[in-house]
Amino acid sequence: VFNFCAGPAMIPADVLKKAQQELINWNDQGTSVMEVSHRGKPFIELAKQSEQDLRDLMGIPDNYHVLFCHGGARAQFAAVPMNILGDGETADYMNGGYWAQSASTEAKKYCSPNEIDITCERDGKTAILPAAEWPISDEAAYVHFCPNETIDGIEIRDLPVTDKPIVADLSSTILSREIDVSKYALIYAGAQKNIGPAGLTIVIVRDDLLGKAQSIIPSILDYTVQVDKESMYNTPPTFAWYLAGEVFKWLKEIGGVAEMQKRNEEKAKVLYDYIDQSDFYRNDVHSDNRSLMNVPFQLKNPALDSVFLEKADAAGLKALKGHRAVGGMRASIYNAMPLEGVQALVTFMQAFEQEHA
Ligand code: PLP
Image 1 (cartoon, rainbow, N blue to C red):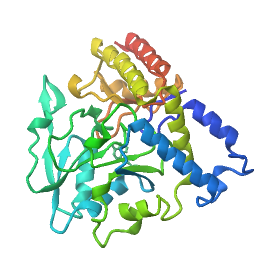
Image 2 (spheres, rainbow, N blue to C red):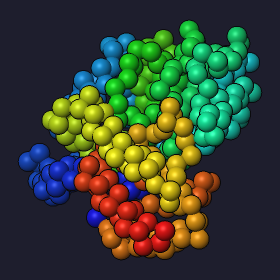
Image 3 (cartoon, helix red, strand yellow):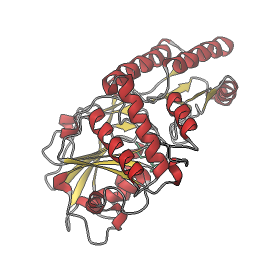
């Protein structure tokens, strides 16, 4: 079975096998990792190692803190403005799709964000304006954007052109390609796509953003509290944290993010190339902004959608239904999806096309 779910998504098979072996006896403790104290030495060691591995993988500079939080990316939609906006301040929200818009909608509870539409049409397809054309406001305290729009299948490889702190929702792109963390002030990402199980959220925050939280902020969302408590202000999602650590080890073993990016580019090319040469399927995103991770595609005849999904599922190609906001299909091909999974999908699509064209 190949699972194309947008999240929770596949976890590398080798990691799952190891976790299975360790389930009832982790680290010679005679119990599972779920049953040990997060304050005990074995778990603290796990926590430190996983942070170090993530730092190595992403090249996170020393003046950044790495937090392992609860609440998913949506908790961060609220945490970001509450942590870094001063009284009466506001921020720019670059809107390239569904998730950027969702972040901005949540931020409206805490400020009046400038919502800036950065989408455009190019050659009859959806695209993103070049970053140099994004109208960043003078008064913005930070600039928020979402580099990979999971639902729309849009990827923004540019960074905002600004000296202001850049805040990015990397939920569906973290660890899929190399980035320069030092260009961002704050990164957050839900774990359930490229990191591990749902319930864990990674926050990477630059030192100078701490100590500014509004007094009403729930302590659990306060970055300064979480830094002081080493992400253990309350009981962290220990199993998800453990599995994330195992995914980081796996990624290091296969050659790190550079190797992962190479593999991801190869996988995405196989699928986009097939869609582009076909008259039966189409993808509506301009090649400048096509996502490496989420590939939405439409059948030219939408009446065939349900039979496509049924047959794909029976062939072991799971969760290809597009998000309800977009319709059609979506293949999420995160880090754990092997090339063989994409090849199997293309083979299925070819056969379906031959049968129904
Ligand atoms: N941001 C992006 C880019 C996402 O893809 C998602 C979920 O798919 C979210 C935010 C919401 O994440 P969560 O469910 O962890 O709050």
